[in-house]
Length: 181
Image 1 (cartoon, one colour):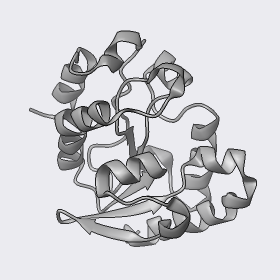
Image 2 (image 1 turned 60 degrees about the vertical axis):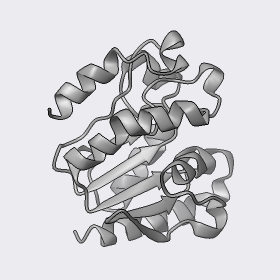
Image 3 (image 1 turned 90 degrees about the horizontal axis):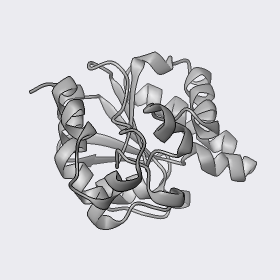
Image 4 (image 1 turned 90 degrees about the vertical axis):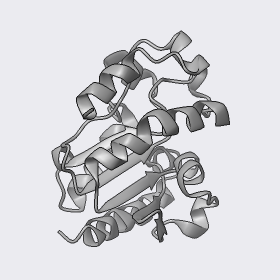
C-alpha cells in the first residue's frame, strides 16, 4: 500500500455520514517526502468542488503565510482531519473525525513521515493531541507518539480577527525553524 492507493480507497469511503453530501474527497496534496505537514479541520466549499485542500480564502492566506516564512507550499503536505466536507461547514463530529483519522490520516502521517506537523486550529489540535485553547498553546510543540506537533491558529481565524495575523506569521516562521531548514 502507498499514498496513492490510500487516496483511491478514501475516495470511495462510506465509513461515516460525511460521504453522503460530498462532491469530492479532499485527501491532501504535497510531496510524499515533505518535511512539514499541515493538518486543518475539514474541506470547505471550494475544496469540496475541486478536491484540493486549502484553496479558498483561508488557503490563499495560508499560502501567503508559508511564503512569508521562506517556504514553498509545493514542499509541504497539506490535508485535514476529515476528507469530506461537513454540511454547512459545521465542525466534524467525533465519530467523523476519529473514523477518518484512524482509516486515513494516521497512515498519511506514516507515509509522509514529516519532521514536524502543524495543526491548524482547535479542531485539529484537539483531535490529534487532545489539547485545546489555541490562544494559550499556539506556537508550542507537543511530542506525541514519537512525532512533533505544533499548535497553530487556523488561517480563517486571522481572516475574522486580523489581530491574530502577526502571531500566525511568527508561528509559521517557528514551524520552519523546527523543521530544521
